Length: 153
Image 1 (cartoon, rainbow, N blue to C red):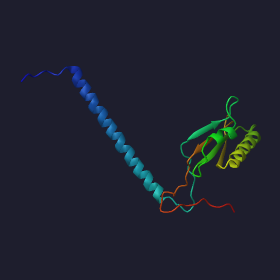
Image 2 (cartoon, rainbow, N blue to C red):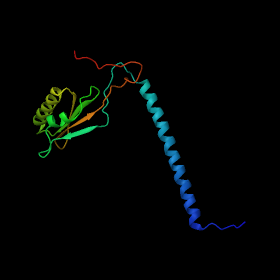
Image 3 (tube, rainbow, N blue to C red):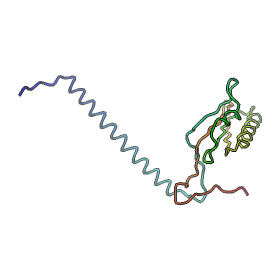
Image 4 (cartoon, rainbow, N blue to C red):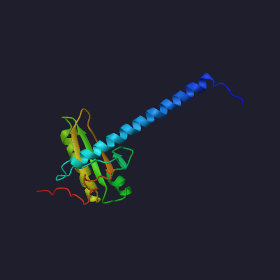
């Protein structure tokens, strides 16, 4: 049997691989425990008044002189009753009326195309407006029954 002495670089590489494995394992364990604590806090939350979630976007729209209008963009998107078009508008103090009017126009256009619409307007240092098409759900839908949004009074 021939024995070979391990070179120093091989030992260092093996040590680094072991360290990487342990760090990854620790991160996964930490993430799993965080997910479990989040699910416990979600279960203890009062579900009598559902709160909306904003899901990751399936498609984004931002107005551009070279791009399509919102109506053209929406006509290319499939109409799905599970999807919600969320219009995000940020305004400065000076641009507030203009951004509100643009958000209302975009909202009306999307509603006319048959999309569920939500508008989120905030004050910021820069005025901007864009739309996100996503499959948003109400918290609690995954429970035994669907919790419907409160109706308008």
